[in-house]
Image (cartoon, rainbow, N blue to C red; front, side):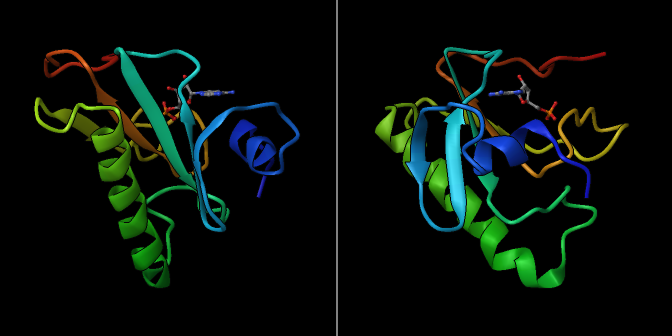
Length: 116
Ligand code: AMP
């Protein structure tokens, strides 16, 4: 697998404040936030995207959603709501080839988050 910025963040080669970390998952603020709350939740395992994940990664991917839920609660946006987004591949607009779940909120969101 080719190197990318998220793999560097996982290896702690790039300084980054984590808002969540365990042995499998990391979460940090997006460097170009699209809303007042914009967090990325990523697995430490090198998975490119949902299209390439293995069936055995299902529990790990499910855990990413639970962590997003918990972060949303901690940031007090659960009640008003938020958007969870995973881009897949070129047509999905995925820029970083490492699986990541966007947690976006803190404002009323329309349909278009970074359209082409
Ligand atoms: P995507 O377009 O779904 O692949 O999303 C990639 C996201 O990663 C974008 O929202 C970028 O702003 C974000 N991003 C890229 N580099 C960094 C970085 N060093 N730290 C935090 N977020 C980043």
